[in-house]
Length: 63
Image 1 (cartoon, rainbow, N blue to C red):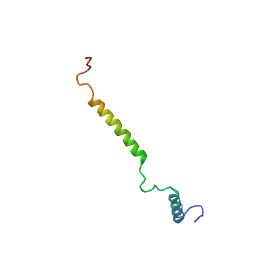
Image 2: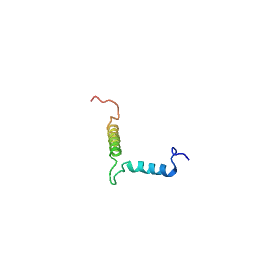
Image 3: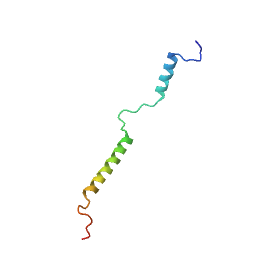
Image 4: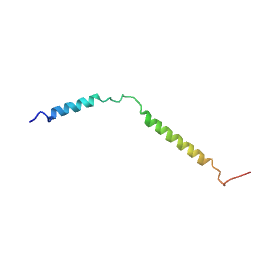
């Protein structure tokens, strides 16, 4: 066996070290990007619904 090829133990240790280096998400932290996207889409949907509901039913009225 040559020294150039890593064995299972060395590969597992390298993988564990790489996982430990990644920052873990904090518990209780809200996903603000997803919430902001949802609020933006929701408010656009409400605005579209209001525009649709308040449109003139009988075409243009110049009275």
